[in-house]
Length: 363
Image 1: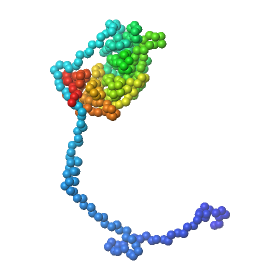
Image 2: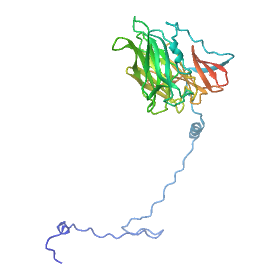
Image 3: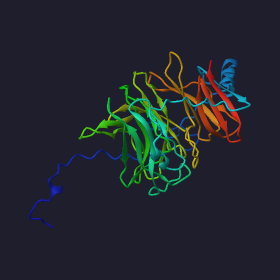
Image 4: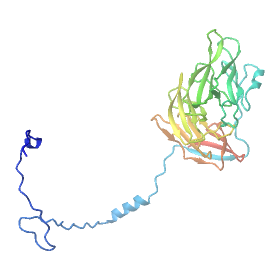
Protein backbone atom coordinates (compact mmCIF):
# COMPACT_ATOMS: atom_id res chain seq x y z
CA UNK A 1 0.00 0.00 0.00
CA UNK A 2 1.38 3.37 -0.94
CA UNK A 3 1.48 6.01 1.82
CA UNK A 4 1.24 9.62 0.70
CA UNK A 5 3.61 10.68 3.50
CA UNK A 6 6.86 8.95 4.35
CA UNK A 7 6.90 7.23 7.73
CA UNK A 8 9.62 7.67 10.37
CA UNK A 9 10.90 4.19 9.63
CA UNK A 10 11.34 5.06 5.97
CA UNK A 11 13.56 8.01 6.91
CA UNK A 12 16.00 6.00 9.05
CA UNK A 13 19.27 4.99 7.36
CA UNK A 14 19.58 1.37 6.38
CA UNK A 15 22.74 -0.17 7.76
CA UNK A 16 24.05 -3.42 6.30
CA UNK A 17 23.22 -6.39 8.47
CA UNK A 18 26.11 -8.49 9.80
CA UNK A 19 26.32 -11.96 8.33
CA UNK A 20 24.39 -14.58 10.30
CA UNK A 21 26.58 -16.57 12.68
CA UNK A 22 25.10 -19.91 13.63
CA UNK A 23 25.12 -20.86 17.32
CA UNK A 24 27.85 -23.32 18.02
CA UNK A 25 26.85 -26.13 20.31
CA UNK A 26 29.43 -27.91 22.46
CA UNK A 27 30.71 -31.14 20.99
CA UNK A 28 29.94 -34.41 22.73
CA UNK A 29 31.90 -35.09 25.87
CA UNK A 30 35.39 -36.27 25.03
CA UNK A 31 35.18 -35.17 21.38
CA UNK A 32 37.60 -32.48 20.16
CA UNK A 33 36.08 -29.18 19.04
CA UNK A 34 35.44 -28.70 15.36
CA UNK A 35 38.06 -26.73 13.44
CA UNK A 36 37.54 -22.97 13.69
CA UNK A 37 35.28 -23.23 16.73
CA UNK A 38 35.81 -22.61 20.45
CA UNK A 39 34.77 -25.06 23.10
CA UNK A 40 32.04 -23.90 25.50
CA UNK A 41 32.95 -26.50 28.13
CA UNK A 42 34.74 -24.76 31.02
CA UNK A 43 38.20 -25.89 31.92
CA UNK A 44 38.57 -27.70 35.24
CA UNK A 45 39.49 -25.39 38.14
CA UNK A 46 42.79 -25.76 39.88
CA UNK A 47 42.55 -27.09 43.43
CA UNK A 48 44.16 -24.89 46.15
CA UNK A 49 45.33 -26.73 49.23
CA UNK A 50 46.05 -24.33 52.14
CA UNK A 51 49.20 -24.98 54.08
CA UNK A 52 48.89 -24.47 57.86
CA UNK A 53 52.33 -23.62 59.10
CA UNK A 54 53.19 -23.85 62.83
CA UNK A 55 53.52 -20.07 63.01
CA UNK A 56 50.09 -19.49 61.48
CA UNK A 57 48.55 -22.05 63.82
CA UNK A 58 49.97 -20.32 66.89
CA UNK A 59 48.74 -16.94 65.65
CA UNK A 60 45.19 -18.25 65.14
CA UNK A 61 45.12 -19.84 68.59
CA UNK A 62 46.30 -16.61 70.21
CA UNK A 63 43.77 -14.50 68.28
CA UNK A 64 40.72 -16.58 69.25
CA UNK A 65 41.67 -17.62 72.78
CA UNK A 66 43.24 -14.47 74.25
CA UNK A 67 41.07 -12.54 76.73
CA UNK A 68 40.35 -8.87 75.88
CA UNK A 69 42.75 -6.42 77.46
CA UNK A 70 41.40 -4.75 80.58
CA UNK A 71 41.32 -0.94 80.46
CA UNK A 72 44.05 0.84 82.39
CA UNK A 73 42.65 3.14 85.09
CA UNK A 74 44.51 6.02 86.71
CA UNK A 75 42.90 5.54 90.13
CA UNK A 76 40.92 3.02 92.15
CA UNK A 77 37.63 3.17 94.01
CA UNK A 78 37.80 1.46 97.39
CA UNK A 79 35.06 0.78 99.92
CA UNK A 80 35.40 -0.04 103.61
CA UNK A 81 32.50 -0.69 106.00
CA UNK A 82 32.28 1.48 109.09
CA UNK A 83 30.49 0.70 112.32
CA UNK A 84 28.68 4.03 112.56
CA UNK A 85 27.84 6.78 110.14
CA UNK A 86 30.74 8.23 108.19
CA UNK A 87 28.66 11.22 107.10
CA UNK A 88 30.42 14.50 107.77
CA UNK A 89 28.80 17.00 110.12
CA UNK A 90 26.99 19.77 108.30
CA UNK A 91 29.26 22.82 108.40
CA UNK A 92 27.52 25.61 110.27
CA UNK A 93 26.68 28.78 108.42
CA UNK A 94 26.65 31.86 110.59
CA UNK A 95 23.12 33.17 110.26
CA UNK A 96 23.04 36.82 109.32
CA UNK A 97 19.53 37.20 110.75
CA UNK A 98 17.20 35.20 113.00
CA UNK A 99 15.05 32.73 111.10
CA UNK A 100 11.85 34.54 110.03
CA UNK A 101 8.50 33.17 111.15
CA UNK A 102 7.33 32.96 107.51
CA UNK A 103 9.79 30.10 106.92
CA UNK A 104 7.46 27.84 108.90
CA UNK A 105 5.06 27.98 105.93
CA UNK A 106 7.52 26.23 103.58
CA UNK A 107 6.37 23.18 101.66
CA UNK A 108 6.48 19.78 103.46
CA UNK A 109 9.84 17.99 103.78
CA UNK A 110 11.78 20.98 102.47
CA UNK A 111 14.72 22.84 103.97
CA UNK A 112 15.43 26.43 104.93
CA UNK A 113 18.90 27.50 103.77
CA UNK A 114 21.08 30.29 105.14
CA UNK A 115 23.16 32.38 102.75
CA UNK A 116 26.58 33.98 103.14
CA UNK A 117 26.25 37.16 101.09
CA UNK A 118 23.13 39.01 99.95
CA UNK A 119 20.69 36.22 100.88
CA UNK A 120 20.10 35.74 104.60
CA UNK A 121 17.53 32.93 104.30
CA UNK A 122 15.60 31.22 101.51
CA UNK A 123 12.94 28.49 101.35
CA UNK A 124 10.36 26.94 98.99
CA UNK A 125 6.80 28.13 99.59
CA UNK A 126 3.25 28.25 98.17
CA UNK A 127 2.50 24.48 98.26
CA UNK A 128 0.42 23.28 95.29
CA UNK A 129 -0.70 20.04 93.66
CA UNK A 130 -1.09 21.50 90.17
CA UNK A 131 1.79 19.33 88.84
CA UNK A 132 1.00 15.75 90.02
CA UNK A 133 4.44 14.21 89.63
CA UNK A 134 5.78 12.16 92.55
CA UNK A 135 9.49 11.85 91.77
CA UNK A 136 10.19 13.07 95.32
CA UNK A 137 7.48 10.93 96.90
CA UNK A 138 4.82 13.64 97.07
CA UNK A 139 2.81 15.57 94.50
CA UNK A 140 2.96 18.74 96.61
CA UNK A 141 5.45 21.15 95.06
CA UNK A 142 6.34 24.82 95.47
CA UNK A 143 4.68 27.59 93.54
CA UNK A 144 7.23 30.13 94.76
CA UNK A 145 10.59 30.61 96.44
CA UNK A 146 10.89 33.18 99.21
CA UNK A 147 13.96 34.84 100.68
CA UNK A 148 15.26 37.56 102.93
CA UNK A 149 17.72 39.57 100.81
CA UNK A 150 19.41 42.94 100.48
CA UNK A 151 21.21 45.04 97.96
CA UNK A 152 24.78 46.13 98.71
CA UNK A 153 24.72 48.28 101.83
CA UNK A 154 20.92 48.23 101.99
CA UNK A 155 18.46 46.88 104.58
CA UNK A 156 17.21 43.29 104.64
CA UNK A 157 13.86 42.79 102.92
CA UNK A 158 11.55 39.82 102.30
CA UNK A 159 10.96 38.97 98.64
CA UNK A 160 9.11 36.27 96.73
CA UNK A 161 9.59 34.83 93.24
CA UNK A 162 6.30 33.30 92.04
CA UNK A 163 5.97 30.94 89.08
CA UNK A 164 3.18 30.94 86.47
CA UNK A 165 0.45 28.33 86.83
CA UNK A 166 2.02 25.84 84.40
CA UNK A 167 5.27 25.65 86.39
CA UNK A 168 6.41 24.57 89.87
CA UNK A 169 9.65 24.10 91.75
CA UNK A 170 9.88 20.29 91.82
CA UNK A 171 12.59 20.46 94.45
CA UNK A 172 13.07 20.34 98.21
CA UNK A 173 16.09 22.54 98.86
CA UNK A 174 17.38 25.80 97.34
CA UNK A 175 21.14 25.48 96.63
CA UNK A 176 23.14 28.65 97.26
CA UNK A 177 26.37 29.26 95.31
CA UNK A 178 28.35 32.24 94.09
CA UNK A 179 28.42 30.95 90.53
CA UNK A 180 30.02 33.98 88.88
CA UNK A 181 32.40 35.02 91.64
CA UNK A 182 30.85 38.45 92.14
CA UNK A 183 30.38 38.06 95.89
CA UNK A 184 26.63 37.51 95.66
CA UNK A 185 24.50 34.43 96.29
CA UNK A 186 22.77 32.65 93.44
CA UNK A 187 19.95 30.12 93.93
CA UNK A 188 20.05 26.90 91.91
CA UNK A 189 16.66 25.18 91.69
CA UNK A 190 14.74 22.51 89.77
CA UNK A 191 11.81 24.09 87.93
CA UNK A 192 9.25 21.82 86.23
CA UNK A 193 7.07 22.83 83.29
CA UNK A 194 3.74 21.07 82.70
CA UNK A 195 4.57 20.59 79.00
CA UNK A 196 8.38 20.52 78.76
CA UNK A 197 9.47 18.83 81.99
CA UNK A 198 12.17 19.91 84.41
CA UNK A 199 15.01 22.39 83.93
CA UNK A 200 17.72 23.94 86.08
CA UNK A 201 17.16 27.61 86.84
CA UNK A 202 19.46 30.17 88.48
CA UNK A 203 18.00 33.11 90.42
CA UNK A 204 19.81 36.09 91.89
CA UNK A 205 19.18 39.30 93.82
CA UNK A 206 18.97 42.37 91.63
CA UNK A 207 17.52 45.88 91.92
CA UNK A 208 13.98 46.33 90.65
CA UNK A 209 12.77 49.33 88.64
CA UNK A 210 11.98 51.21 91.84
CA UNK A 211 15.36 50.39 93.41
CA UNK A 212 14.22 47.70 95.84
CA UNK A 213 15.74 44.19 95.82
CA UNK A 214 14.02 41.35 94.00
CA UNK A 215 14.75 37.80 92.91
CA UNK A 216 15.18 37.55 89.16
CA UNK A 217 16.05 34.77 86.74
CA UNK A 218 19.69 34.91 85.64
CA UNK A 219 20.07 31.66 83.64
CA UNK A 220 18.29 28.43 82.82
CA UNK A 221 19.18 25.13 81.23
CA UNK A 222 17.29 23.07 78.66
CA UNK A 223 14.13 21.25 79.68
CA UNK A 224 14.12 17.49 80.10
CA UNK A 225 11.80 17.16 77.11
CA UNK A 226 8.22 16.48 78.19
CA UNK A 227 5.84 16.46 81.13
CA UNK A 228 6.98 14.41 84.16
CA UNK A 229 10.58 14.21 82.93
CA UNK A 230 12.79 15.22 85.86
CA UNK A 231 16.43 16.00 86.59
CA UNK A 232 18.55 16.21 89.73
CA UNK A 233 21.62 18.39 90.38
CA UNK A 234 24.97 16.77 91.21
CA UNK A 235 27.11 19.73 92.21
CA UNK A 236 29.07 22.80 91.19
CA UNK A 237 32.77 22.93 90.24
CA UNK A 238 35.13 23.97 87.45
CA UNK A 239 34.75 20.76 85.44
CA UNK A 240 36.31 22.01 82.19
CA UNK A 241 39.29 23.88 83.65
CA UNK A 242 38.43 27.34 82.31
CA UNK A 243 38.49 28.99 85.73
CA UNK A 244 34.71 29.38 85.97
CA UNK A 245 32.21 27.28 87.88
CA UNK A 246 30.06 24.80 85.98
CA UNK A 247 26.92 22.92 87.02
CA UNK A 248 26.51 19.13 86.87
CA UNK A 249 23.17 17.33 86.89
CA UNK A 250 21.59 14.03 85.86
CA UNK A 251 18.64 14.24 83.46
CA UNK A 252 15.96 11.51 83.77
CA UNK A 253 17.80 9.59 86.53
CA UNK A 254 15.03 6.96 86.68
CA UNK A 255 14.82 5.99 82.98
CA UNK A 256 18.32 6.12 81.55
CA UNK A 257 20.14 8.88 83.37
CA UNK A 258 22.36 11.31 81.48
CA UNK A 259 25.11 13.08 83.41
CA UNK A 260 25.31 16.60 81.96
CA UNK A 261 27.83 19.38 82.52
CA UNK A 262 26.72 22.99 81.95
CA UNK A 263 28.66 26.19 81.45
CA UNK A 264 27.08 29.17 83.21
CA UNK A 265 26.55 31.67 80.40
CA UNK A 266 23.64 33.97 81.38
CA UNK A 267 20.90 33.86 80.33
CA UNK A 268 21.68 30.19 79.62
CA UNK A 269 23.12 27.11 81.25
CA UNK A 270 24.81 25.57 78.21
CA UNK A 271 25.40 21.80 78.17
CA UNK A 272 28.87 20.87 76.95
CA UNK A 273 29.34 17.23 78.02
CA UNK A 274 27.11 14.20 78.64
CA UNK A 275 27.62 10.66 79.91
CA UNK A 276 24.97 7.95 79.70
CA UNK A 277 23.62 5.32 82.12
CA UNK A 278 24.07 6.95 85.52
CA UNK A 279 21.59 7.84 88.26
CA UNK A 280 21.58 10.05 91.33
CA UNK A 281 18.04 9.46 92.57
CA UNK A 282 15.61 6.65 93.34
CA UNK A 283 12.06 7.25 92.09
CA UNK A 284 9.80 8.32 94.96
CA UNK A 285 12.62 8.98 97.42
CA UNK A 286 12.98 12.27 99.25
CA UNK A 287 16.79 12.04 99.36
CA UNK A 288 18.39 13.90 96.43
CA UNK A 289 22.08 13.48 97.39
CA UNK A 290 23.34 10.43 95.53
CA UNK A 291 26.42 11.80 93.75
CA UNK A 292 29.47 13.75 94.88
CA UNK A 293 32.15 15.97 93.38
CA UNK A 294 35.65 14.92 94.51
CA UNK A 295 38.37 17.58 94.39
CA UNK A 296 41.83 16.33 93.40
CA UNK A 297 44.93 18.51 93.77
CA UNK A 298 46.42 19.50 90.43
CA UNK A 299 43.61 17.82 88.49
CA UNK A 300 40.12 18.62 87.35
CA UNK A 301 37.45 17.48 89.82
CA UNK A 302 35.98 14.01 89.54
CA UNK A 303 32.34 12.96 89.84
CA UNK A 304 31.47 9.79 91.75
CA UNK A 305 27.99 8.69 90.74
CA UNK A 306 26.00 5.42 90.85
CA UNK A 307 25.00 3.42 87.82
CA UNK A 308 21.33 2.88 86.96
CA UNK A 309 21.03 0.01 89.45
CA UNK A 310 22.19 2.30 92.31
CA UNK A 311 24.45 -0.56 93.43
CA UNK A 312 27.77 0.33 91.78
CA UNK A 313 29.80 3.54 91.72
CA UNK A 314 31.64 5.12 88.80
CA UNK A 315 34.37 7.77 88.92
CA UNK A 316 34.41 10.13 85.93
CA UNK A 317 36.40 13.19 84.89
CA UNK A 318 35.99 15.51 81.91
CA UNK A 319 39.42 15.78 80.30
CA UNK A 320 41.05 18.61 78.35
CA UNK A 321 40.85 16.40 75.26
CA UNK A 322 37.07 16.81 75.31
CA UNK A 323 36.39 13.25 76.44
CA UNK A 324 35.29 11.51 79.61
CA UNK A 325 37.90 9.52 81.49
CA UNK A 326 36.79 6.58 83.59
CA UNK A 327 39.19 7.04 86.49
CA UNK A 328 38.56 3.69 88.17
CA UNK A 329 36.87 0.39 87.54
CA UNK A 330 33.21 0.42 88.68
CA UNK A 331 32.87 -0.45 92.36
CA UNK A 332 30.00 -2.78 93.28
CA UNK A 333 28.52 -2.36 96.76
CA UNK A 334 26.57 -5.01 98.72
CA UNK A 335 23.28 -3.14 98.52
CA UNK A 336 21.36 -0.25 97.03
CA UNK A 337 22.80 3.21 97.70
CA UNK A 338 20.35 5.47 99.55
CA UNK A 339 22.60 8.47 100.19
CA UNK A 340 26.06 9.61 99.06
CA UNK A 341 27.68 12.48 100.97
CA UNK A 342 31.03 14.13 100.19
CA UNK A 343 34.16 13.41 102.20
CA UNK A 344 37.76 14.46 101.51
CA UNK A 345 39.02 12.19 98.74
CA UNK A 346 35.74 10.33 98.36
CA UNK A 347 32.32 9.89 99.92
CA UNK A 348 30.21 8.29 102.62
CA UNK A 349 27.65 5.82 101.25
CA UNK A 350 24.58 4.82 103.20
CA UNK A 351 22.96 1.62 101.92
CA UNK A 352 19.37 0.41 102.05
CA UNK A 353 20.21 -2.06 104.84
CA UNK A 354 21.34 0.80 107.09
CA UNK A 355 25.05 0.10 106.67
CA UNK A 356 27.67 2.77 105.99
CA UNK A 357 30.68 2.50 103.70
CA UNK A 358 33.65 4.83 103.40
CA UNK A 359 34.43 5.37 99.72
CA UNK A 360 37.91 6.47 98.63
CA UNK A 361 39.15 7.51 95.20
CA UNK A 362 42.91 7.18 95.27
CA UNK A 363 45.99 5.61 93.67
